[in-house]
Length: 463
Image (cartoon, rainbow, N blue to C red; front, side, top):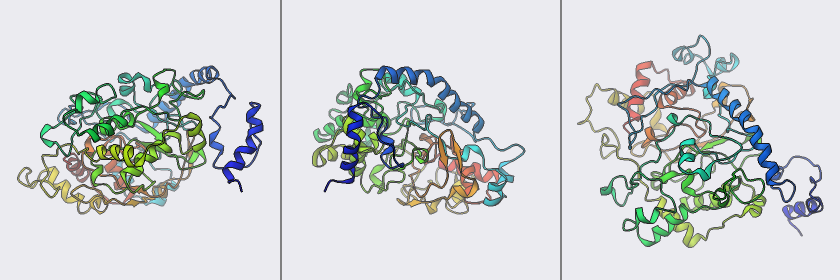
């Protein structure tokens, strides 16, 4: 007996052979494969249509961001990431007219929802082009790696709300070396020069695979790709999103969900410190870094669409060697140094006065603010998934192609090195740590005052 997938493909073959749309039918998990051209549309037609629409798509998303946030850079010269980029300071999220953070926090979830007072910046953030989705890379990265530019859409969040580029690299095996990136973006062109003599031969091969381009849904050789460049047609590398084993802030859509409007934006998480993590993926709960590595190549690269993957050039990795080698390199990526922390992962009392904002913030973190319930020391993650039920505070609504509704449980990400990983939450809706403090003060109904939130942020910046 033929499988359901095989029967469906056979049903479509006569139409595909004629270059015509397939038979009409109810929506299903396979309706998202429409972009696979199979002779239905030429690349020149796709290119012309998408280029013509790009300005309007970018403007629509920019308008949404300006309505949600104050996008003005507000760097604090005393707050820097490892390589010197200023840490963004907020909150950037705009409040409803006449509202203050303190007043908002006194309202119940029902009151906030019924009166429409939930800050727009706290709502789920849509992909820059949600009906299409796919990997979109920040402008600072595209400038360094032009092959990552898409002709149909540009990245939306300003650079000052993103991690520094390129980020530093720290190794668990060679902490004596400090940042081993030499200030460069690690690519296939320079990985050997940078790491020969630091990694063993097996890890060198794993790193080579992590910086090798493989076909992806929007970066491949088929006619519905979203790159004009010949080098972009070769695909993307793992370290294009996870730049230097960290993140550039590149965004994508979760591949597991259908229909398209319900798929969620997912910003690239850092690979720093994955050696202490036991779940991978914001909602997939993959159980090992090997599972994550193989899943990315087989499914996430192609939006969970196995038929599209076959057409565009999926790259199955051999589990016993290639996946293992790649995973081992990822397990070597360390957090940035945190000189203010003691052996227990908490602040060293010899370095901070008892009345300092940082020490006050630590007391709040492990007490009234309830942060440590999900983010315990020393690595500030409980390796679990939790549902914040943010939908208590707003009514379901469509936002630039995204259906904002209940989102379910999400992975508890580590807070070590958190000042270097803006923006925050799984979809990047919170541009700064101040926004994050305001968000959780409201969601968890903590009733923190302004000084308590300031101290809490000061503590998190020491992690």
